[in-house]
Length: 138
Ligand code: ZN
Image (tube, rainbow, N blue to C red; front, side, top):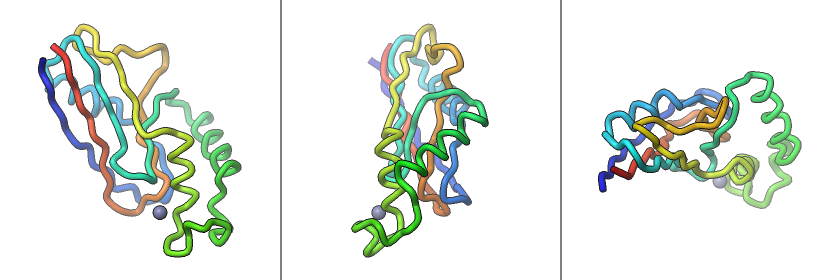
């Protein structure tokens, strides 16, 4: 069995942003040489997420509004976690959007359903962060 990994780095200037990382993940799969297998992508931070959905700006704006309703950033003082920091809402948003995704690799390609794309979701940006891409298979 082959195994290959790479880290993808992000310097997100805003607190919150969704980045389509599908082309970068595709490149890693190509480099791995794996034709049949699995590709795991996970955020390496507890205030960031990796998820799969449509690359449609209306949907992304809807997701941001929905997350803000579920875990509003302000007032910062509403969260016990914010005694030392101000990112409790970011931890919760990551919990809702998930830590990782696994995509099947068939015939050397990411085997997506219609419109599926992989996103890195940042909820506490303005510093350097990374995601892991791990490919296993034959
Ligand atoms: Zn924190």
